Length: 95
Image (cartoon, rainbow, N blue to C red; front, top):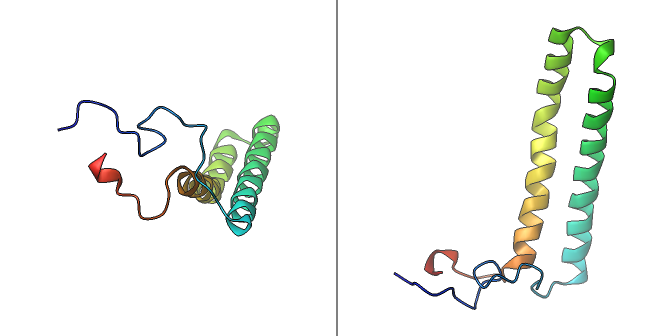
């Protein structure tokens, strides 16, 4: 088992801000995922701000109905961030 951090992976080396090189298509996809996530967060914020307009059970139902969309947008963002942090073909298990 390794005891020293590897220098190959950005997270292992402690350098999270050093992105892997990405093409403009990947940048555009990442920006689209971030925009989608931000839009969903904005919708959730509005729902919470207007919570007093709903009965407690209506509010819970609306939040429950909204969560799959928010989760999907968040995971899309995470995937694009991970693609940027780790170059393709990197074996994270041998870190």
